Amino acid sequence: MYRFLFLIFCAAASPAFAQLKWENPWQEFQRDPEVEYVEATFKFTNTGATPVSVKSVKTSCGCTTAEMAKKTYLPGESGVVTANFHFGDRVGAQRKIVTVKTVDGISQDLNIVVYIHRAMILTPSLVYWKKAQDPLPQAVTLNAEPGQVVHVTGVTSPNPRFGVQLETVTEGAQYRVLIAPSSTVEKDKAEITVQTDYPPDAPRAYTIYARIK
Image (tube, rainbow, N blue to C red; front, side):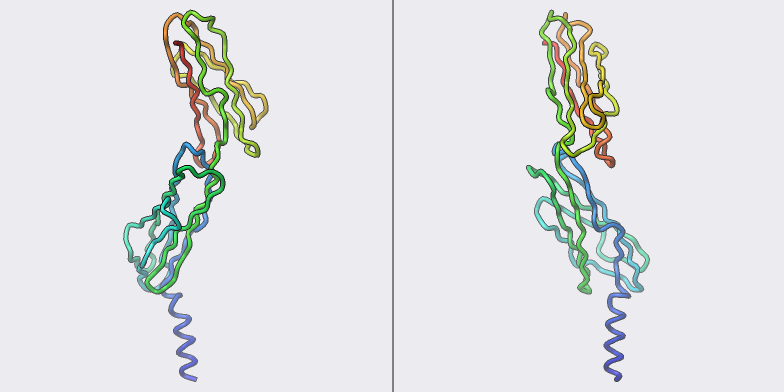
């Protein structure tokens, strides 16, 4: 009888007095391949009654790194695991796992899910005029990747000699940017910025290159 009660006490006490509670162990991101990497921040709190020491922090592949400021956390103390996943040549849906294991044998998988795709395609991304050529407008078409809703929120030219005009073909799917130089007498250039609202947590900007050569 006493042995039975002892086992119940140990089973109840072990994880209850040394536990890390994670706020968001599953995180999802939408990213363009050109961004190259994503950083995920996993916050936790020691909700137990005794200090918790982390034995190891391991990632599922060499493309992902993870670190934390220290290994031991007092009751009520919070901490963060910062993980970075570098895309390399990967595209499509990717899932990377960071496993945190404490000295008492409790482990937690932290998941990074990234959908890597080019949300918007510019055709062409470079427009140019030859010197003394008629400065007629040239069009750049912006198409959202099938299945994605991407809105263009603005187009700006840092060079006042290149005028820009945004046209909506299909809201959230296709746009057209008209670019025209005020003159082609001299060589000139501009990097025109196309700002979008996608992805929501890190809106992407694209660049159109305009040249007079």
